[in-house]
Each structure stands twice: as structure tokens, then as C-alpha cells.
Image (cartoon, rainbow, N blue to C red; front, side, top):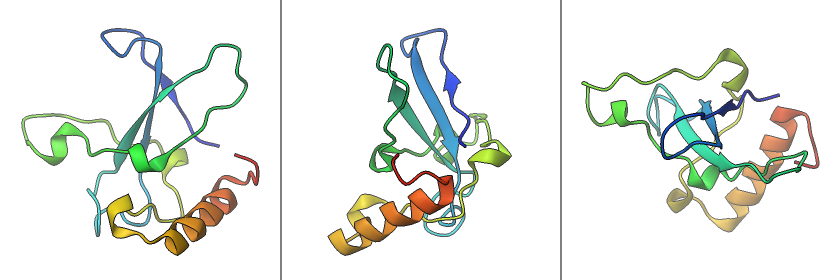
Length: 107
């Protein structure tokens, strides 16, 4: 299970926010993790996660920013490589690994 935060102020009001880290954090990607903003569809009981849309927090580029760390539940035991580094075979493998990591074959 992943923990999502509902943004309640500013231009992102009503969007869901996911802070996560994976096995690429600190090696191929920013060490403190990456972020993903999601739109919740009204009355939907699920949310589609597209990790290809994840991004580095501001603190990855500028030390004057303070960024939240992912909660322990959002430290994933799989790898989400930036899409530009992957082939289609690797993308299929990545999706399979995510399904195992979150314990849901139907996400």
C-alpha cells in the first residue's frame, strides 16, 4: 500500500501527491526520492500510477529548498528507471516488478 497526500491549497488543490523512493534512488536518480502528482477521478475507487511522469523535487536542484522524504511505506523494493533509459522490454519487466512490490496484480 502506498500513502498518497491530498493537496488542499494552491494551484494543485484536489490533486494527489506521492513521494516515493525506489532502488534507483541515490544511484541513478535523486537520493531522497522522486514525486508524482496525480489527478483523482471523482467517484473512482482506484488511481492509475504512471511512474514515467515522476519528477525530482526542487531540493534536487537547489539546496535552499526543503523537501519532504517519502514515508517508509513508499520506499519500493523495485526500480523505476527514467523512461528515456529504458527499452520496451525493460518497461514490461518494470511493470511486473511493480505489481509484485505493491501486492496487486491489477493496479
